[in-house]
Amino acid sequence: MQVHLKKYTLPLKHTFSISRESHDFQDTMIASLTLNGKTGYGEATSNPYYKITTQSMMDEISAISSEIERFEFTTPEIFHAFLVSKGLSNFAICALDLAAHDLYGKLLGKPLYEIWGTSIENYPTTNYTIGIAAIDVMLAKMQEMPWPIYKIKLGTSDDVAIVRELRKHTDAIFRIDANCAWTATETIHNAPLLKELGVEFLEQPLKADDWSGMEEVMHHSVLPVIADESCIVESDVEKCALHFSGINIKLTKCGGLTPALRMIKKAKELGISVMVGCMTESTVGISAIAQLIPQLDYVDMDGALLLKSDIATGVHIEPDGKVIFPKLAGSGVQLLE
Image (tube, rainbow, N blue to C red; front, side, top):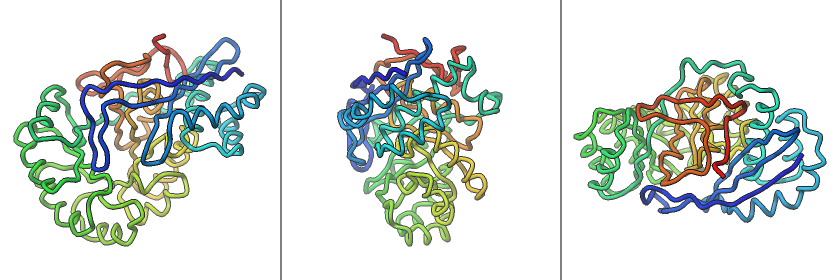
């Protein structure tokens, strides 16, 4: 099995800001795996919060590239276990796991959602993310992209006022992501005000390790709260079920589709809602996420919609949120090159 790695810098349509950082470009790494004339593609982005760069991922994978090429590929799950045994970071594992799943589907001639026994007749609509900015800039972004659901990034001194102003211009559902910027007291205070403004849920309002604060929020918040930074890997799901209404799974953080499928199953067993989110990936990563949507309650897979230009074809999202799946098997990805 041949392995190939390539770095890309993805240009964003607009400066993207959250509570802890801003950027105009997103560095990403595309991994490809080729076997029997078929090629699968996977992706993982750099991430300063988790101290991951495209170069660090490439160095990790290059160090075991000869072992990957000798590996007798049968299923993505067995390949994933091999990668874990080599001690790679979850981001690097994610890129290879996504490529392995895409390859596996292409070898079988079936899309992944079909292999998993799910139907794409019904699925949740992705939100469209509005980063932190001046009110007029946030409004301009909403007007540029009319959408049924917006995720609003917050973490300022005027968060409720921002939502109140945005609400004057749209009837869309709002979701709020504070990216760890609030305290328990702020969250409990803001929740009823935001609920009146049509907010559906809050995502990770507190710092990732503030479990006592989240317990307080769970007892007093009038809005559901979804874990993001507090839910990284499979072992986090059970603890999050005691402190959150649901979890947001990020493929890069957990290590790909293989563990994500297990996390979805576990969350459903525990009776909490399930969301899968993106990291401003290209269509390569978004197409992998899209294979999971029949299994989800919520999804945030607008990454490719935030780009000025893309590097691949695959799953396409229409202006009304409808998802168009390609006829190509696996994740349906092809690099534009």
